[in-house]
Length: 551
Image (tube, rainbow, N blue to C red; front, side):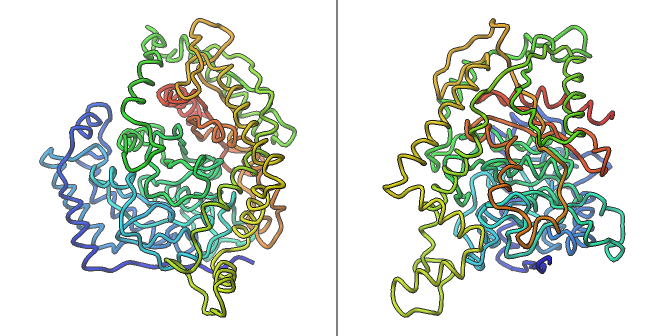
């Protein structure tokens, strides 16, 4: 029932020279600023060369089964760059704390050295003429590209089963075992659409990976695989070079082992980009920094109470019937961890959250229908050999190039954009989206410079952050997901916890928080903050992370 695996290794003289060029780019002032805020990733005994060797070993051992990486950089190139990075560390000339770390990049992020297929036959051989801004920032900081990772086609899916490269498997219960001893019906989904990124990080194939988050595509896989998944505020990281699914929702996200590692990558990428009109300008970033109060007031003389003065909201609408017993239990334990750390925990209400999934489906499919019109078989990408006429060429090309799930969403999106449905569906969904934004602004005590909500720091009924489960259950079995086993609409319900933050453009992070008592699989808790308040999300997430390691 599971489709086959595709794995391609890239060997190129041109790629080798370009990688050397990247490895010798001088550090910028911004990298020096990051150096002062972050502990180094490597030490005298744990070097980039050693880390790269371990990553390559994990890829060689597990990737054939997990199917996380699709295109892999020549190991000789990776080792050469890691050796050069090790020499820089030994001379104390590292470009950044990340210098020499092996990273994976989702297949919808453009790279000039490797293919960018979006896991679709439509772009099976597409190689971009440029590299995404987010990746350029990391490469300039010394990061080493390990390869491109698997995903749901064009980012559409919750289980990473809609890929022309085959399904991605969750590494939970796999690491340390011989592949030939694994029982395939027990294989679990890695989540979607950034399942390849999550599986690669969780199986130690790379230090961290980039994904994209449209309605939970970074956070849900992170929760399923037991790692950290972070979606920053919309516009914080440039989308230039991220192939669009739903432009008003798409966000470059980070998957890493720890909250601090996620923060390191975020600080390197969160910069103005004139090539992306939706990326926050430096002026807007300065306005956010000025509008959001310093975190100094949350500090306590007692280091065991790092959240003194912080108010955390618990949205009652997230306590849904579908929430498993283990998820609800971990949520309660997370709440207690926040209280133990000095936070004030308050119940809050987001009354329109129940409308979020419907609004997301409407807006996401409508934008996908518009964005994917460009794949017509004329300019680039797949072209059908059935060329009887112009209309027939379009039809055959798109039918052959797009998978079942993408075609379904295009059809739904085209319908809601028709003149007879536009007012009833698309405009109504936009109004619901704004209402949900207003609900968040009403409960956060910090201002949103985009919606121009007012600050209410002294209002004891309003909060600094929210805590919810990331998912209603643990990772499902793949045999229950493939072959039409899941209703397409019900599949969206797995994102019901993550969609609200995406609709409002808020920063949100999934943090691993223990395992399920029934099946032994990881569970995650989600921290959400006001627009632009990534600092608060990281602060609260560190507390959740620390307690999660104890349980």
